[in-house]
Image 1 (cartoon, rainbow, N blue to C red):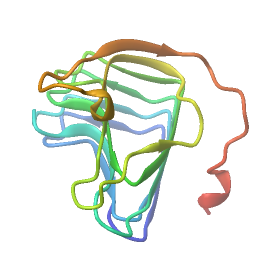
Image 2: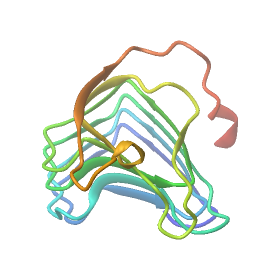
Image 3: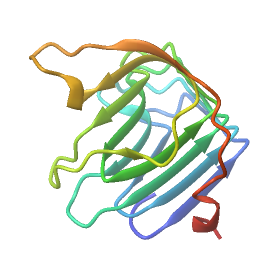
Length: 156
């Protein structure tokens, strides 16, 4: 979904759909609940990506209870001006990082969490933490968050 759009997905399965499963960018609001993304085939892409890479972009991404597994590229990539809330997620066994935070290509913005992520992410790559030419990654389990949903009012 691109531009001033809202995309709400519940109980969906994206299986073997080629380059990527879900891509929200340039001022899109994305809300996903209990979805599965598996079997993407492009190593250069993420199965689930939210990107606000250009000046004036603002993307909101609320992803709850979703499984992102067994994809050829990254599992979840958050790029640039993305405000995100990742809750009760399982992103693992992807060939790239299971969760990747990276800077916007044209606006130098970084993703910002609206709420501490919860769930399991096999490997996490945060480009802002890389000091040398070799990326580092770690496995992360986040505790379940309990605060209210700041994005509920954004989706009508």
